[in-house]
Length: 461
Image (cartoon, rainbow, N blue to C red):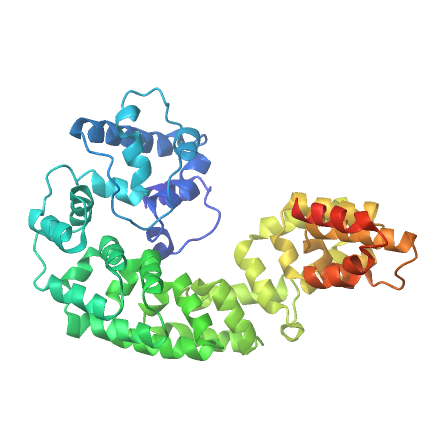
């Protein structure tokens, strides 16, 4: 929180962030988002962490820890390029030679914090020994997992917990991963805590690897989830989606949806979205892309909807408000102004620019460089008038190199050889790849042998 406070004081934070969003980030992600981008502007933010890392290397080197595969934990894996490039360690540092391999294998920053305590001697030897014997942990892996727990107690009935997971159909490796992620599971009461939760998840066909993935995403949220919350939340979320497969995708994207009081948190926001004219299908698509919409404050979502409606001038009846919401969530007001400036530099008036944003709000998600190149290709190279792009703004979002330019070249060749007439340019750009090939490429493969090969080569680049 001290890091965020410093960024806030220096007005470097891009937008308001919810506390739970920040604390759930892995240490690596937190470093990438909130430390490395500002290491030149605020050296005091970056250097202490670098020193701590060097201490870790020297610590593990002095302990003589073996390069064993440690426990699988959540979070992105560090690469050598990241550590020596972005973070800035020197490969000549004498401590690196001892500990680099162990650090890379260890997989994530969260393990770094735990492993400083997981030396050759465990603080909870009874638990470590149990993990080794029952689930096949290595000594180092077991010590790392035991170090995650503040308590030195031994679980009362860990065998019952493991047996329960086996009865749920989990393999030994999957149980090992679950315990690695959330070792407190071993302390759970099977009948009172585990069965109600996992039976709810089984009802939506979440089991095996899916269950492991859920705990990888947010083990703490699922561990703390009350069985009654799980049941009511699943019932409520089930009403928002069209099928069980989508429901599983939703909770895998944000397991925290199962941990909160769903009816109290979700229902007012669903009613608000409906009030602004979003259909059930649009609400499903929206929450699948941005599940945190259901977790934010009601006032936050209300403000987002008003901005999409008023600032982007999107009518609720147009069917585009959902995309406007996604655009507003992703962008600040200054970013909108910057992107409008790109259009203005190409001779567009504000009214036409807003028409484009109103018809296709996700144009706002394009980078300024991409907008500029798209406008250049469509107007200068392809000869499209601004009026045509205003009528077909989604064209601007298509891949220029893998779709627009190769397909336009095909249309040009067919037109020159008088093999295809009255072709709708926009339709030719929008249709799927298989449909385009079957209609515009394959029928002329014999007459124009080079057409197919050159097109496929361009698309695959």
